[in-house]
Image 1: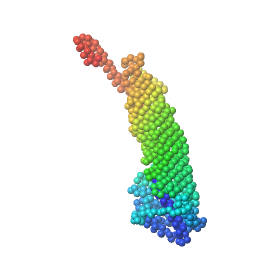
Image 2: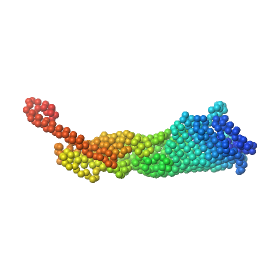
Image 3: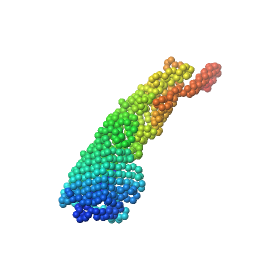
Image 4: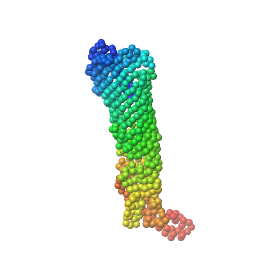
Length: 594
């Protein structure tokens, strides 16, 4: 973009110089209409392009000597579309003659109306802002060295002074046929007064910006003070006040190597704003961002031939993204080559703390993200309420530690969940699993074993625990786990299964081992020592849960068989063991597994 900016400056300078020459040299000698063929031929000889001046050329004599130019167009080179590269609806220039005698060029007023510049890169990768004439020899197109003369300026160079410069309803567009990306600056209105290359002057700018990637439709205004230094080939822009949609910014910028390879450095302070409101205003996707208030930032910026780079700090009072709510967020940001790195990131989260880092690739049609987030001592009830919704029957309470190490892509919540991949860890203490009463299911299993009526489920429908741990692998939004462990005073639960985040459903196969108590005996009337198989499946809003009675019957049958075998072994050992000579009794015990 530095090359584009450099080109635009040169193009405007070319137009101004052309008008100056016409106004001063020919005002009293030639009918300007007679100059059209010569101008058209000169442009064709030097650029290979067609200049069409179908508007009227006329002189102006009061209050300054000048010229008015009607509609003109400059064609694209071969290999590009028929849209003119440059179009000007109207231009006016007035020149003060006397200051020229003192080495100063002073224009009374310069006005451009309806300037449109259409930049393009075609499918072959060629650009339309290259002006080398393919038919001209190297000697013809070689630039000549131009040395500045002496004059009234502090640098010894000719001073350019313009009382006012005004551009109305201008357009700058860019289309890339290789990447199929585009942007446009429309309804551009620019004004500056008391312009002088020897001292600062004020300027104002307003425009509408649109872009395909990232999606952008926004109105921007800017005011600043321009401080040129032609001797050092630099330009400073200070006291910048800018507004883009609902974002207000202040800052400054310094441009070096103006005539060769412009490079920009600057500082930008973003005043507090609502990020979600901004995304809504510019027409960008914001469904994955539920809330973002009190966002403010401060950046250092660098723009050169290597692209745009930025680093700084960002703060948000409240940020809720993908239904996860953070408060008092502080992070350091670094942007380069279409990649935004956020590291470190610190925030308050559900009465606990969060820390981590993230990278977001912004160059593609949808953002790609990699996130590592550690949350400690969080209120799991509040976290689950945000993630699942208050109306979901399945939830979790307690104090927990959560770690996520994931990648995803997308802008909408459902797309982000479908593209989610990575790993997760969970450790919760002193809480409840609501929506599932495992104690009731143990009672159901006991009633089944003892052929008793089914017990009535507790209306609370929850399972208390001292600790709950587990890890999971995530693939395309589906979490798979095999090491869930829940410790409760009455039983221990182990097992695994899947949790489908986009579908908000689960399918878990669990084993419940009843803890032994003093009044329990090791017989078929109780379930001590056996793994009671449970299955919990379905949507979070309507889970199905129950004892796998067929599997439990098989387990109990095997247990009964083991008991019969053990009793047979005891009887054989008792009847024969004492009657065998020598150590044969011991050998028999070994054979029977005693």
